[in-house]
Image 1 (spheres, rainbow, N blue to C red):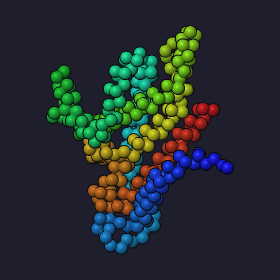
Image 2 (tube, rainbow, N blue to C red):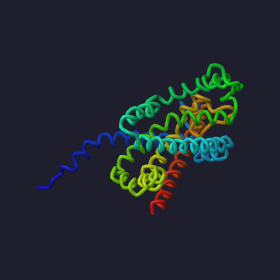
Image 3 (cartoon, helix red, strand yellow):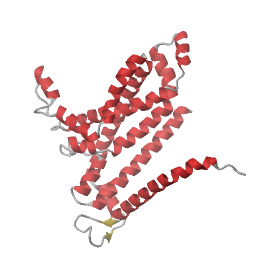
Length: 291
């Protein structure tokens, strides 16, 4: 008699997988249907006119899309790079710290990720405020004039990058930290005996062993940062003069502020295609590095 016990976990997972597949199928099917028609807030309850790929053409030719794409590249590149570097360094320090120090600092570093992204955005909005912000208060205390962080294109971009880095870095600390637990303590001792410095061990032993974790962390943080807009919507609303209007926020504003649902859906699909290309590129580069 055959043993089918291996199939029991799959049977338990089938309902959840079925629900997720159904929601994805319905959501993307509805999204594609809207893109192929002219759907606005004015005609949503009437018959929709079929326009084919016209919405995609409008998306590609719209100068605002190019501006949003450039802002997205700057924002995503800066946030992912900072989260990776800062998170990996902190994770390594926690890994090498004595247990008492590690237990004290780990909850403090992870705390930002436990907060809602909107709460984090509101908190940083207060910190960067011109009138009541703590940062400007400290600047005026040492004789530096107040800075209107949300009034300039560069300072506004820097503000949302700092806020997102603060909020997202704890994930990298947790993820890379879990990878560091796979490094054998005996390997650390052998490295010490061979005379390897802390920097040599980190760069020549730890980093190569953590490469799969680093790649997955880059992929996940890129996808989340590229497609996230709640923090930017709360802090700057895409301003000033669209200087922080990233691609997902461009889609949101087009659909729910301008009322052009078809155009907003087209931008969303455009964003997903770019995300898939980035993920494919990451894995291709990782394969080359691992070889």
